[in-house]
Length: 306
Ligand SMILES: C[S@@+](CC[C@H](N)C(=O)[O-])C[C@H]1O[C@@H](n2cnc3c(N)ncnc32)[C@H](O)[C@@H]1O
Image (cartoon, rainbow, N blue to C red; front, side):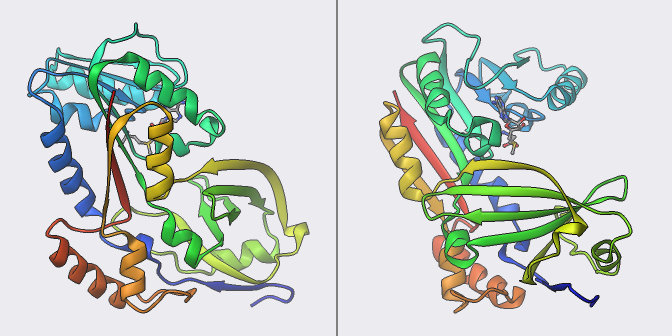
């Protein structure tokens, strides 16, 4: 360890659990919820994977996203598969370019409401989702259940590695309300911090995570960091997600939390610990999966009606 630098690497965390359950749960829920012949809008569709899976059972599907890169990929796959009932359009979830009462089902999957550009505008997105749905239409939302994060790690500090070989340092402060404030820094090239990070072994995971979680036992000296910016995120727990949709005018709101990681971590006797043991967590996860017969993961799914 270089002088003035005291960082402890977190070898593994709950985020390295096997998340393949997620796809299974999502498929089951969507198959149950999206009726044959439905007109579906996917808000924040990314590369379009969910609509490709549903195209055989729906009348039509429209994917909107703010990212042109993701949409280009979605459009490319759509062309190759020759799926003529799907369309992909660039749009902001805050202002959907469709008339009211246009869709039977609106999907919003993958923590879209927690995107930093939507911070403070979550209500507008929910109001748009409600507007474009017909009466008795259905909304499905999926996000991460952040409850465990707040209890275990009110501060989250990690490095990311860029394709060009540079490193970034991120300090995130989490409040119990679900507010996250992230400060991002570039690691000064050739600084002792840069030398230290080059020597570390990075975690391997099914998702090829390119981040390394650490604890700052002493704050990293500011001269080794170049401040890049600050972002705010709104995350959800079971309760706050339900409240947001109910306040947005959705009724019959059901929220499913499959084996919240918080439960798993608590079952493994690791609550309050900063470092997690992967075998203990994996064992607790397997037990939880068996109990629920559904798999586990820190996932929240919500179904609401208009
Ligand atoms: C984590 S990805 C989820 C992608 C996909 N729904 C899935 O489940 O695989 C979040 C997506 O939200 C999109 N997004 C973020 N802010 C948005 C906005 N204001 N309007 C539309 N899409 C947005 C991002 O571009 C990204 O594709």
